[in-house]
Length: 151
Image (tube, rainbow, N blue to C red; front, side, top):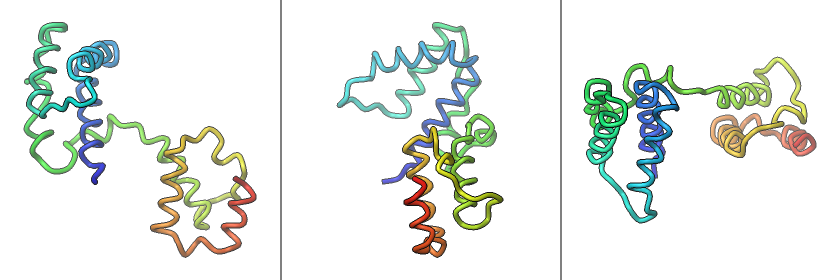
């Protein structure tokens, strides 16, 4: 299993949303897409997605998606296309990284019970995964006891 196709697919949808004018134009497209392809056992190819999106935005918004999206780069080149990073909001990951620095003694404050207030389960999972895979040496008995007390 690899999360790369899912991340790249998400980034492609964010890119399309950006070039078509934002959520006001993208949300109806998503509804149309789900209406047409949303059956649980149905899958489509990248080419079918390109065709459907191109036709939809041409018909509903008079936009030439072929001119606005470099489909070859998105579908056939490895990695993320240039400019993708600016479209993604990594504020939740930044919170995880800040707390990770605290627990690995690189941070500038003591951990508190409020550090994870409002966090999603994904943020907590990422924190624990990072601690267990890249900072296991920081997980002393004292540190684990402190985490247990706080959270």
